[in-house]
Image (cartoon, rainbow, N blue to C red; front, side, top):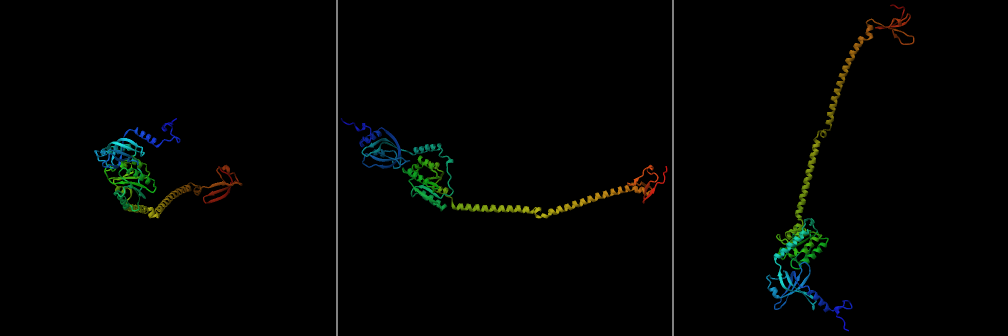
Length: 415
C-alpha cells in the first residue's frame, strides 16, 4: 500500500514538507498576486551590453526596503525620460519567485518616470493631508532655548551647510557645542539615515535643539525632506527642530512641521544661537538704562525731600509754635481786657447799688434824726418795737441813733 503524497497530509514535525514543496507553494501564492504597479526609487542599474536582461533595485524612499527588478534593456533605452539611479519611477510587472535562489523579483514590462509635475502634485496632496491633521498648527511649535548648550546638526558630509552653521554659530557664541550627524541628504537612502539621526539626537538629553540643514537643490534633490515619515517624525520629537533646507524659494514640507523654519543654514545658525556681541551690547544698554533710571529715581526722591524740607513746618519747626504763642498772647490780652471791662462794669453797678443802698438804708435814715427802738428780752435777742402796746411801762429798751445806741426804760405811754 503506497503512502500518500506529503502535501496531502497535515504538515507537522513528523511530516515536514521538503524545500521543493515550500518553494512551489510560495511560487504559487506569488503567482496568484498577478500584475501590479509599484512606485519607488531606482538605486542600482545593471545594463550590460549584449545581454537580454537588465537588473535594477527599486527602493522605498521612506524605509530601508528594496525589491529586485528585471526587465528588458530596450525598456530602459527607449524610455522617454533618461532613467538614472535616484530617479522616482512607477513600474508595471509581475512578481516571480526563483526557487533555486529562494528570492523574489519583479519582472516589469512598463516603466514610467515620475515627472516634476506629478511629484509636486503629490507633495501638495501630502501638504493638504498634514495640514488637515493639524501638524502645521503654530500652537504645536516648541520654543527654542535662548542659549542652547549643545546643538544637534543633521547635514551632509563635507557640505557647505555644515560649515555655514558651525562657523556662524561659533562666531556668534564661541562656547556653543555641536553634536553632528552626517547623513545622505538626497537619494533613496536619505530618509532612513535622517530618521535614525533624528531619533538618536532627540533621545540625547544634552541636545537642546536639532538643526536639519541642507543646501539648495532641485525638486528631486529635496524630495526626502517632503517625505511623510520624516515630517511625522519631526512632529513627534520632544526636542525643538529647526528646518534649514535649501534657499529662500525652497519650501519642503519639513519646513512647515518644524518648530522653526530658517531661510538658509546660515540663517538657522543666527536664529538658534544669540550673538555674544549683540547680547553684551544689550546688557550694557540695559545696565546704562538701569543706572539712568536709578539716578532719575534718586533725583526725584531728592526733589520730593527738598520740597518737604522747604515747607514751613520743617524749614522752621518753631515758627508755628511762635505764631501760636502770639495768638495765645493776643487771646490772653483780649480775655484780660474783656474781664477788666466786665469788672469795671460790675464795679460801677456795685457803686450805684451802694449809693442807692446808702440812700435808702437805715443808717442814712438814722442820720437824719430817726431812731430804731428795740426792746430787750431777758432770754433772747432785742426785738424792734413796732407798736406802743409792745412797750408797757418798765420795759427795757435799746435806742439806736445815727452815731450809736443807748439803753432806756419805759416810764409811761402817751397816745
